[in-house]
Length: 219
Image (cartoon, rainbow, N blue to C red):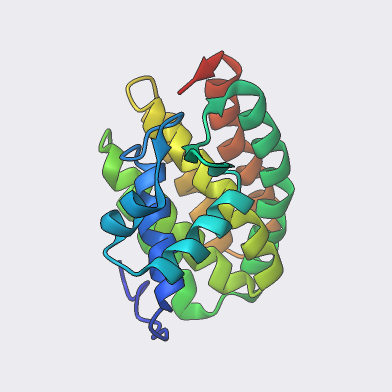
């Protein structure tokens, strides 16, 4: 990818590091839906101290990835069909705002990075890990291009829930449809086609909606 990660960022705080570690473990099912976990276990998993882990726990609970059970610990929030459909309903308009602004605001070098992601997606084929990595790369790049921190902050936990859903159903996912939708989105934003990019967001969300619509309750 041509420079997509070239932007220099300040080191993350310990609380942010703890959040990223624990969010990744939830999304990838290392902390499985419906499982109980203690604060001590999360401290051990993250390798960080009690204070940053507590801050991360509170943030994850606010995002409904954890549920606090008094005197019992934390429940990793189960995945349900109804919750996923509500998540997708909320995510779609936020992603439309982001891609609209990204298509208008992206600098030339960012457009090159968007095109590079589209090319990488075209050769991802059935590589699930590569697809999710590129999806995350594209989301971060679109956020930077759009320059709307409020929309980005609002959509971030919804993306986490969706990535977890992908991991939970990775054996059932038709990656070709998801790859096609995401690649199209990246290309349209790179071309400044904000109307087409918004339609591509609808197509991207529809891929997950079809998977969720056929589900009952999981995890």
